[in-house]
Length: 243
Image (tube, rainbow, N blue to C red):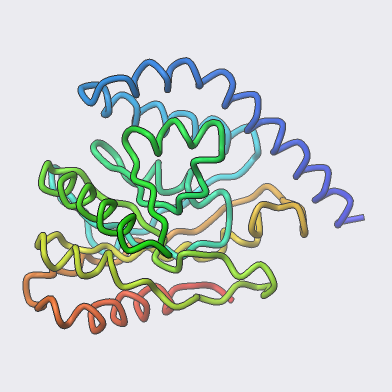
């Protein structure tokens, strides 16, 4: 019975996301035409995320180790196990932020709009694509934008509950180079509400807990110590993930 109810909730959630994506698409299209409107684009993303979550009956409790500074840009690094993760990071990001994501997201009709404008797609198998992507991300960081990444690069769809996958190195080198603090984000139990896209185990309403760790300054690291930084962020996220 529980499995049937979770499947019903999954179909309902897909419908909610689809309907509100259609409603927000003209707004997204308008605000994505010019970089001057990117703040409004992000506000729209946050509103969209909050509305969808509300209609799905999913709520978020954000616990901050310390208060984040207003006006400071960060590199937000989070674990990844659910389609809710993007909504959560849109709510958390605030103001000027953008995502770095896999090139395959250009195939999504809604996300394509973002990854051709404010967000940055990357093909990790192509050195040229990676170079162009990190060059663009570096420019955005220089312009005061925060970066949101899921450094695992993939979801292990065969391991339930999820375990943290090895991190990619590029974002950590860039954070050191640009001297931007890194904020580790532990999405503690989001997978319990929606694992991966929800199609296998269904979804359910409830409260998700998100722990935002104290920003880690990168000024103390050298470029060649990016692996050390990567390992520290991995360990921080892993300490707060609920099993």
